[in-house]
Length: 141
Image 1 (cartoon, helix red, strand yellow):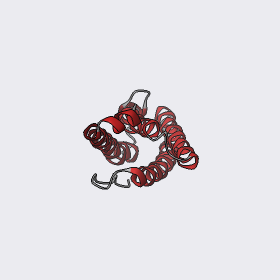
Image 2 (cartoon, one colour):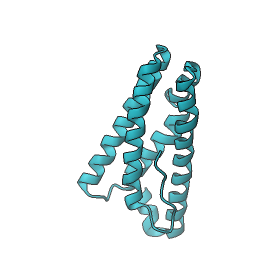
Image 3 (tube, rainbow, N blue to C red):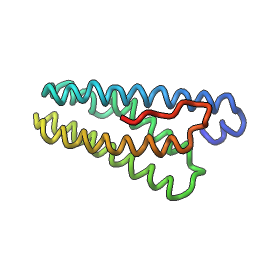
Image 4 (tube, helix red, strand yellow):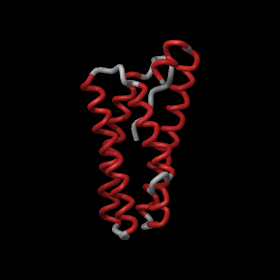
């Protein structure tokens, strides 16, 4: 869909990039600020809410990552493989944070947060390789 839109409607392609960037950056802020604070404060209820299925971070981080991968289906196999790997690792880490929060295990949540951050930073590097130069690149977390 993304590729079809970009071929036919350059303005829509730019809009799609801008919307993707805005949503992902919003999710990155929630991850870096809200989730980090919840883990540091041992606020397990907030950490669970943020990382649950269809929670804020799934909607604002994982869904844009999946959208990005679908929109770059024309990329080389290595790029797509790296996108798939980093998206899976991010999902696993967020699931681990959820499980740690449910079990009230701050150390496990902290470890999983660090793993998620590394995966998200790798995603940012990958996405920035293909974001048009007239659109601001994503920021590392």
